[in-house]
Image 1 (spheres, rainbow, N blue to C red):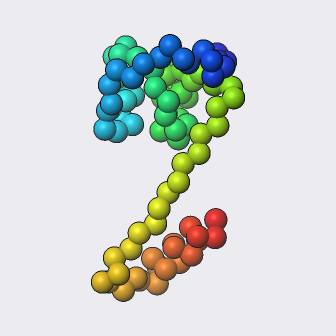
Image 2 (image 1 turned 60 degrees about the horizontal axis):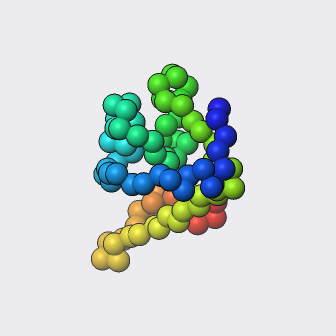
Image 3 (image 1 turned 90 degrees about the vertical axis):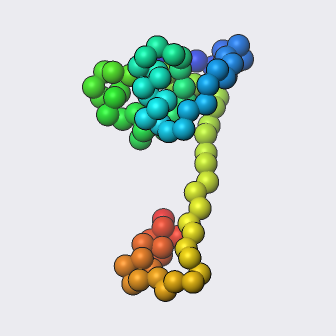
Length: 89
């Protein structure tokens, strides 16, 4: 695995924006460039040796997820359990 530092990324420029992780992976496979994706999105391709991961030191990604429900509908007991699990995780 190749290690990069944050300063090594300065010359990179965005050339395209694709709508899904699958589209990004296909673009990478076609030789269109590199991307930053979730490790879960590329797990299979990394294990199969199709894609290669490069660690970027000094860079810590975090993202937020939102849980939404429709106020006009009652939430099922199963759904309530899932919501409680997610909120307490």
